[in-house]
Image 1 (cartoon, rainbow, N blue to C red):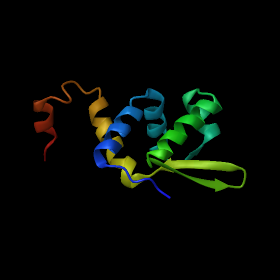
Image 2: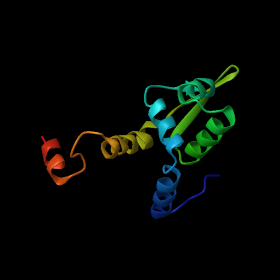
Image 3: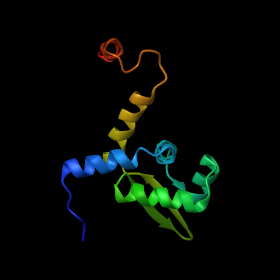
Image 4: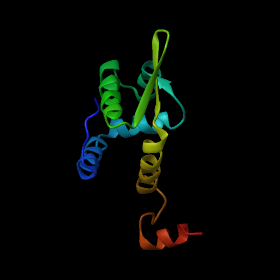
Length: 110
């Protein structure tokens, strides 16, 4: 049975969990397509236990999904939830000069 939580509680939990740089790195890695744990370990230079722990937390937030294919489990972004979240993070983390300022926001508008 899925636990029902208030939107503000989910948002607070989401922000806290996304405060870890390795979880952000996993989300960005998955934005290129689904990956198994071994691929994420190699891409991010993390041990299996750390990757699995971070994936478990991201699954609990419903930001990633998984599917089993024989002996491997593949993880992918849960696009309806993670897509907008990653888009916002890309904007916030952009290294473009002046990004995040009012002038940059005006330049972004069509």
